[in-house]
Length: 119
Figure: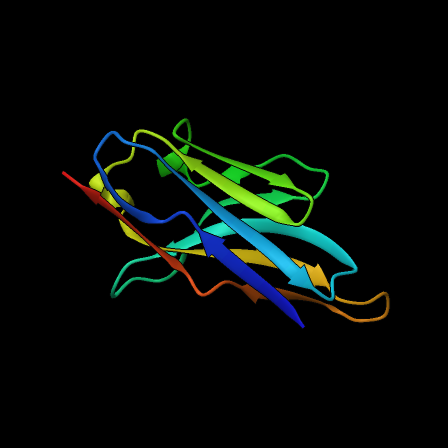
């Protein structure tokens, strides 16, 4: 069983910074990628940033130059700077994991953490 546990969300004023963390634990043979998505009420969940193992990070255009994704062991971070009110959303951690050498890869999700940016 794989679990993703997020931390670091909260309330911040526009222009401020937050750092999200997400640790993966449990039965993990390999991690193919880790990333962050976000969702606001009535909208589809959108990709914010992703970090494939051994490859370059990718970002949605709206956060380029402001957000930075990084990984260490089984943890993914999202450093969010120059936050804007439109960044307000529930942020979800995602990981593409192979649990055992013979299992298929599958997506795992964290429960989500609220980020609120006030104007």
